Amino acid sequence: MVFQRCIWTCLANTPGAASPEYGACVEENCNETEEQQAEQSAKPIQQGQRGNWTIHKLSIDEPPYYDGYAANTQSSNGKMWLSFVCGKGGDKYISISGSRVDALSLAAGQSKRVTFSFDRDAGMDLDLGEYEGAIISDMLPTNHQVIRQMQSSNRLNIRFGSHFETFSLKGSSWALNIALDYCR
Image (cartoon, rainbow, N blue to C red; front, side, top):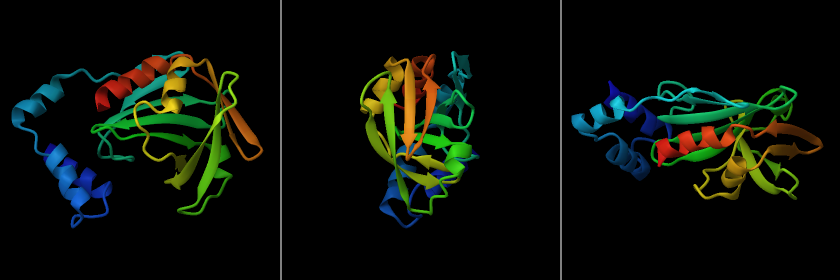
């Protein structure tokens, strides 16, 4: 059953079964030996909360169809959720959801420029696109400035248009490190 879920995950995250990306995904992720699968199953699954951040193991049976972790926090007014998602194999992205995002009414394929300002810095812009009711970034490299700042800063302001939300980053380093350790 694990093998079949892996196949479905590859199918969901590539252009289709005929694509080279699908073949590479299956070859890289779905051909573990029984010994490797048993070794991976023996690793403890970490879940929990520290500060304002939670971490939970993702299921390949539910969106976003990843074997990975999501580090999550809620804005200070509760209108927005911020997630850092890291899937096995190294996929890393930021996802933002909530009532403020719902109000954007982005069309499929349309992107929104979002400014991330940490503590008192000037901020950096990312273009996020709509996916299943959230806006998400493109895949980010491990050393991306947003990831580093999320681990080391105290506060994050996210601005899109005339709206902004504030997030406490207390506990973010703990949560992001768990996710990053798993998906390397």
